[in-house]
Figure 1 (cartoon, rainbow, N blue to C red):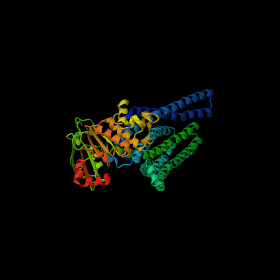
Figure 2: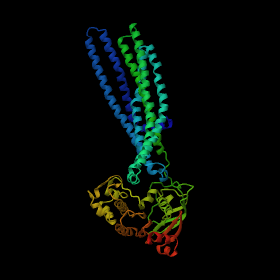
Figure 3: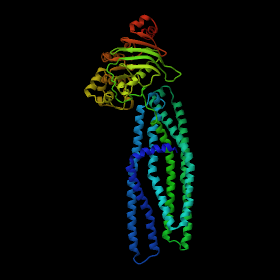
Figure 4: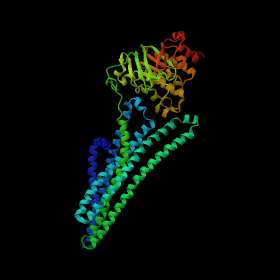
Length: 581
């Protein structure tokens, strides 16, 4: 068990101190009533075995008292469960909220280290396991310790020798549990890691079934899944095997204690040193005393698993959040606002890996209202340039500024609020068509949403959907064609009306006729706005104010469409091969 992890969990639990105190008070009442019941049973036995006149009335009184004690035990246990469930699930809710919040604030570069399946496993499955461990701990740990102390005190008062037999033999349970827990923790730790890989692979296969089938990868996919499944099963079985040894091993010790108490108690009873009622108390308390050791060992096993999962969740919570170069604005609002949209790059260098430079000394300027088209071969850095402008990554060196402000001094919220993007990769969230269009402007009116859809020629197909703009889109908008999804993404930008417009293959999935109409709509939207266009189609390039041609991370040509054709350089060759031919 990692003590640091334990202390961090305690900080979460301490927030609910009132519920914890109530739970502890109720636990004391429950334990006291549970341990008082054997005493009442002993009194009944003593009354019956040595009856006196009117003993029936005495038995009735004791039985009534026993019923009251049982009711108290049941009610307090019910209230304890309510308190403990509240504490546990509020802690897990808090941890999950913090984990999701953290994911929104870490850099794209850091986020790319994880697979989506692994993150899902950490936030959902691992957090659930933490909750199970905490719930078991609250329910049994304090109750078990209290039971041990009270029964021990009562047994010592009744008969010191029998009490010593119980005390000497019982610690064997803890020794056995400790021995097993050390081995089970390693297995549970490996299990949680493998479960993340397992979830990641399943997520990947489900999301990309079309590709799997198109490349007849089904057999290889099953084989790979089988390997992961075998590994997960192996760790799970080993962890379960070690943890399952705990119960039978401790029960053996418990039965040994019970048998010893019975034998010695009978001997003392025959000698007249204790009554039958007292013997019944000892036999009952022998079970009551040893049972918590059984429960505590189970708690230790579950907590080992919970701590292994907690370390994976805390790993996410400990990730460093995005920081600006000068330690200024992050996502908070600042006094810096983007109103014009003038963009300038000076000596921009960037690499995802230090040994593999992507951009090398990029310089360009875009004034408000201009359209800059970026063309070049695959991998030349076009999309990377856009990622840097959106401040998804930090520059290695150089300056990238908007309206004269280094983007390091502009909060990411202010920067991204001023930019509208349409990417080649479309994304539709779970929700209605209207909610998807209003994704960037949540408070937009229905009239404005419809106007934006009409502007990009999406209105006609939306009206044909079962519930029009109120049609619910499932995950990824699977009921829509790729072109329809892209039109919805374009409608988002039409509604947002940003100062800066970024189009990265924005019309790649749209048919030619619709593209012509959408480009007309873009022309209207781009009027007076700064626009950056990454495209392979001539229709979205030739009318740009300025074109920069990139190759191997450098700008090798710059000018208008006609100017670049006259130079008969790289762009002219690209145009001839890709468009004119």
